[in-house]
Amino acid sequence: MGSNPASRAISPLITGNSSKPDHWLFSTYLILYKYFNKNRILFTDLDGTLLGGTRQDRDRLTDWLWSQNGQIKLVFATGRSFENIAPLIQAGELPEPDAIIGDVGTSLMLANGDPICPRIHAEIDTLWALPSQLVEQQLAGIQGLVAQHKTGPRRQSFTFTPPIDLQRACQAIEAIGADALVSDNQYFDVLPKGIHKGWAVRRLMDHWQVKPEHAVVAGDTLNDLAMFQVGVPAIVVGNAEPALRQALPSNSPHIFQAQAHGAAGIWQGLSHFGWHQYPQEN
Image (cartoon, rainbow, N blue to C red; front, side, top):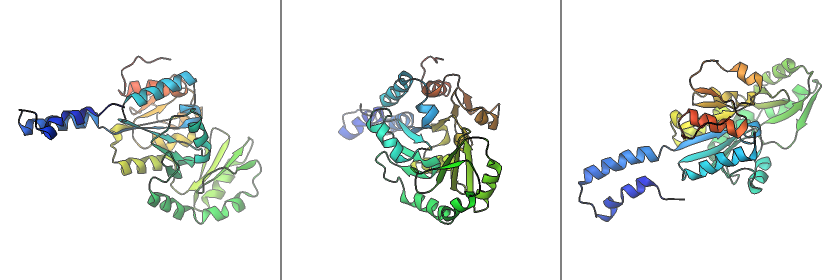
């Protein structure tokens, strides 16, 4: 990757080869630094979003991200666990991200699987300590839930096929101080109280000191709803589930409803928010 233009701009300050006043050079450096070091972040769901659409769409988006010379961080925000993501990265199906929000917001990791901040995981562990012992007991009498075993340590997940008494299931989970999340009409997640993708996005933005206007989120199902409620620019890809669209305000200026599916929808949204100037394509 190329060197940072802001770094090149201050080379006269370091070498002493400039005849211009130091205060002028420093002012110029500050302007360039603010322009080239916005530290922007794209938070994107995987299934149906970054992994949606065609491989060509995904390659165009990821190639463009890499061409930005590190000025845009890529963060996966997904229901998948790290163990389900790592093989896709190794196989080249996904680019290597700067971070992974996994397990519907209950895991915040670097691309190698190490925690971004152990203190954040400790907070989630505290909230999960009691509910984790009671989930199976609470849901024992509800027919149609099938446990998923390859998930992270701070949530429990199930699949289901309607008809099923989801209201009863949600009430049972709320009774033990946890949250229930239904998405894509097939997934039932039990999460620590108040923990979700939106919470994780906020924590990571705070950790990296990123301003809301320098972030974009993208998703397609109800487990992405919390990200759309953070207040940063947001992209609803064209193949989003109807329940997500119904849950979102119809006239919010910070939410872009893409026409294209998956990665192509992200591309449209980034153009809408001024991140690139290439023509949008359906």
